[in-house]
Length: 318
Image (cartoon, rainbow, N blue to C red; front, side):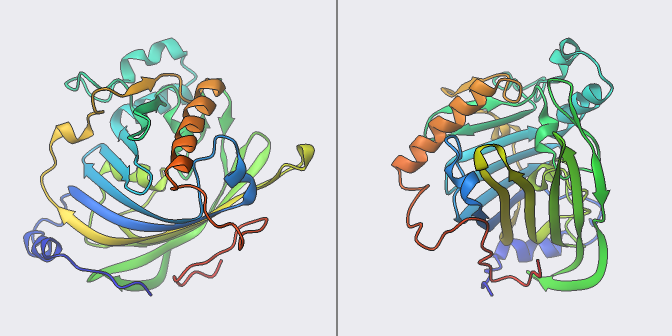
């Protein structure tokens, strides 16, 4: 079992939070993941994924989320309010032309122009996914709408609170778990999920994007997800599957400035991030090349075979 370091800031937060239980969390959440992907996902020409540990820093404030993968140098910035408006409009079958005014992260942030953006420090490039941010909301209970008008509904959702609970970082964390199955392109996308959720730390709206839209009632201090996307039979391509486990290691409550959700100057952010396959492949291929060059993706594959191998120190039974 991993040993966690409880920061002095977190102890102070416990004192400050007394009488403020209804206030959503603002500040930083630092966690580490153990990630394991099938060979097919690892070997895709534009795949930036790799097996091993990632250190993630979340900056949260209201509808905002800034996720920083400190292992890869990749970022995600989301504004939940504008992303929800876009998803609502797309689900109501409004035309893409009506979404222009909804795509801005904020009226007072002149250097941002997207509700969901992925960018990389190593390449100084990024991808604006404002044309269909719902494609990143895979664990939500609603229908996912794509830029081309296609839909991906949920057919099974058993995610709910269980009787179990565990103490993590001096927080009581009930277990919420279950399975979500989404029909996408005629194939079942199956997600088995377990989350140990703090009953003290209220999640701000932007936090849900950290868990892909999962309807989680608070900040999850430990979670795991197993994905099975089926087997691609064309040319015997292979298995779509992965496993991710995450453990929070530090909680830093603080006042977050609006500027922390700005895209840095000098980054080339391309639009049409979910509707243009060539832009998607080109962007991620360039990021992958840089990660391989820096030794971040790659390494010893002697113990990796087809499929996902669950090497975890957690207490997961799937």
